[in-house]
Structure formats: C-alpha cells, structure tokens
Length: 139
Image 1 (spheres, helix red, strand yellow):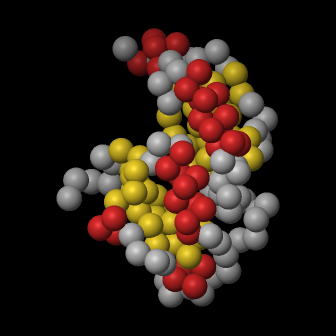
Image 2: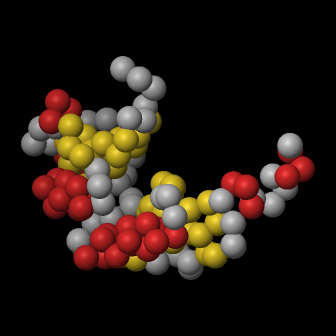
Image 3: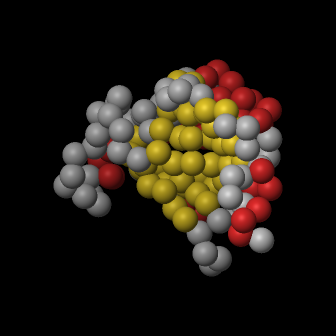
C-alpha cells in the first residue's frame, strides 16, 4: 500500500455522509466499507474513514464532540479559485454549511471553509506558491 493519510471521522448517518462525500468527489472503496464504516477516497494519498458512532466508541472512550464544536480543520487544495467556490456550492447543496469561517483572499491564497453533515470543518483552498510571500527569498 502506498503511503496514505486516513482521517477518521465519527458520523451520525453513514449513508447520508457517504452521499455527501461522494458529491464532493470522494470515491467509496468497498473493500474497507461495511454497515459501520465507509472508506471515501479523495486521491491516491488521502482518504476519509466515516465511522458510525457505535463503532467509533470501540476505538476510544473520548466523547464525540457535539455538532458546532471544533476539534480539527482539515485542509484540501483545489486547482483554482473557481474550484474552491464550486466545492462550497456542492457542499451546501448536499446539506453542508458553507463559509463557517470568514473567507480569506490574500492574493496568493484563496480560502473558504465548510462543514459536513456532522459539523467537521474542511478548509478548501487554492494557493499560488510562486506568489507566496518570501518564496523568492528561498531560491
């Protein structure tokens, strides 16, 4: 198996969460999917494991944060500003919440945030590394 990052997220409704992530471009890997968890793959290096609350409790005794709480923000890049906006539009059409944090436009970076159906925060961004401040100093 190639090196991958799997982000594990507790979800209240597995089927609805699978549909939400599918709409955002994640593909289900049926090998790691059953009635208590689903592996949703974004690319060859990144996947999300959606885990039902009862199954989640088999892994940890720590409480599941309530919807509206913040534990982590997961950042995913997009190829341009338009793709950032399109991702937020898709998320909102499928039950997510767009712009839970203030939109950032720093010129070299454009960033918007969304929450999934369970309130997990995703930062969707585009960055022009050539225009990143200080990048010319590193050459």
